[in-house]
Image (cartoon, rainbow, N blue to C red):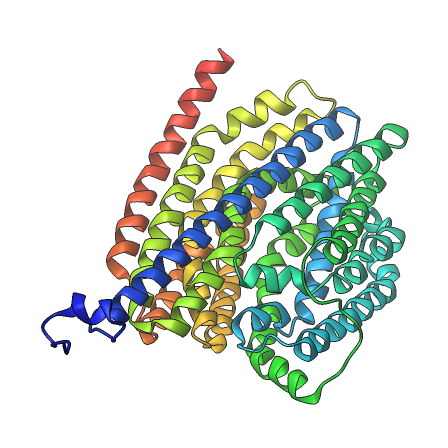
Length: 476
């Protein structure tokens, strides 16, 4: 008996291909990807909120252990410099390992060798610039010693196994999440232990080093991948450099776009006031940090996988991902706008440093800014997944321009308060450029964006009104 074209079930029964086979294959692959993405999202969420919960509680304890505003302010400057060094030398090794089809030992070890050399180079630069930076302002003097010690984390991160990336590529996040949980516990215990003996910025530095060392060691001991060793392959090096050339420019510009507010504030106000800003930003960044973590660990690898296998489904998957992430995160941001001032009053009012209460309105400004930022962040993953890394560079350039224009105009009109309010509108101004580039890629989802931006803008103003009512009612 011969199979007939109009009897697909019989064709399948005898092992012949059917017209439905590609569809069924795509469905099976899509279901498998969805399952892996959901599992990866679960472990990413657990590790993130565990880490942030510990950090949140430890910051409150550190304040009650008499760490001063200036101690936190010094760490803001250290973080700004460390982030700058990382981004000024970023050649896109991590996203290239995720996006590229090569999975051989030579490719991974060449990437690891570049990573190690880069980490040592960054630390040496930190040692060189530490003393000159300490002379800029009298209250920046501790940077002469703190900066070289704290930036040694660049060396530790350089020696971290490439398995951290390759496991992420396959969305097998569980082992990475467990490493991060252990590193968080070690970091917090080291921080609190040092603070009990000597409550100063050295407690923050010690915790930073302990957490980075733990992550580095466990990445080589636990993750099931090849053992990294020094190696250089010209072809692999060329692939990494070609992919990362635009990402290098985007991260350099992104540094100024992301850290210019802290550096400018550090020059305009005291280190103590900068410490208050840091406390506010820690609250405000919880939602955006979670979004970016999910995007980097789950969203980008998943979108890349879909784009490689089934480009026709790419926009559909993108919209579903944005709905699943943007709406809940923006809901959290609106909640922070409504309750931020009250939380600062409850947590820091009775502390030895009640001035941290002032961080409440800073939380509101930064969360309002992130409402627009979370709407456009996923477009950055689109640019990388489709290989258009030039657009990532243009996006952060637009962010830098918007940030400078808004903050400097605000400072001219209303001083420090105007500067901070300028931060609060910079991402809203940047949306125009991201939308234009997303349209060029054929991925601009303007209906979704319009609903989210208009709705969140109106709800944000309502949340500010509610926060004033809530704080007034509670205080009375």
